[in-house]
Image (cartoon, rainbow, N blue to C red):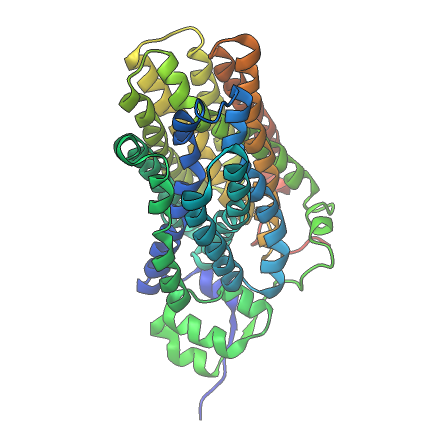
Length: 452
């Protein structure tokens, strides 16, 4: 006669070894976020080709980059409630299909400023699902002891490689095939979506929170095959709460208010700096005397360095979750000071070194902020928490390229880029650093028991 055991799903996932199915799902999310990163950053390589034919002022060129981010804002904020109530898998696949269809339509139909921006807006609705939900999915899947590091390999590696790929296509293919080649290559995400339909399961913690026990047994058996016999007869418990009536209300409840507001302010400033930097750095470096190939190559360099910087920071964060705000502050402060230095110094070697530091610190820290956000909330509104962080952050991302373009238009020079980006990064460091003083004793986390 078999004896039924009781299993805490959270503990079962947190203590699991990294197995083959973990790695397979990590690779799948990496490929999904690769196309997210590629599609997010490729407008920076469109500006060079369309600014003159479409008669764009610098502020309009900035909005060309921002248009997709406006859609991202609505997608990131709106998808969280859907994913928290109906599931991660279906929401992620829906976002993928929106990106697939409208990426291809951009290549075929975008013929002027307004048609391009309209198509990018709708594409952004899908992009607003992929990165935050990929982060949520990985955070709910990965063992707690390596959650930041696993997220960097499973989400950030793909996003960074996508940014690198956009730079490489911009440098080597757009001179021969026009800017449209960026979007024809982006449409290669369509075959990946069919693979995702076949392989991507529902989040195990979401299944547990909805008492979908047969699906949960099957998924846990794939994640931990050595314990499959136990799962056949086990009963499952979960400390997760039911979804709140208002996810915004939950995020701003007394338990979470300080962390939520701090994260939102920091994300706004961080993404203002990141998208101002990535959107304008090729154009600005051309003005500083760099060659076409070198200027476009700076974007790829930043994305490559962002993964290294994020991975370094993630390994530190995995050692002590409560110190993560202080680590983040150190990264952004260093990056901001480095960017400000470009106001006073120039030269190819200096440009190269500072852009590398900016990628390592400013973009690298954002990757860890995403996972820090996911780890700060319960499953029942985690997707909403990450979605709000990236949604509010995208307001900064939208304003970054536009405001910096407008500042250049007013001042007549590129130094405004560095003042704005460096300043935003430093203020963001001060914001998240203020959380560090109370993190050790008051910071909520997904592992903590709900406050009474």
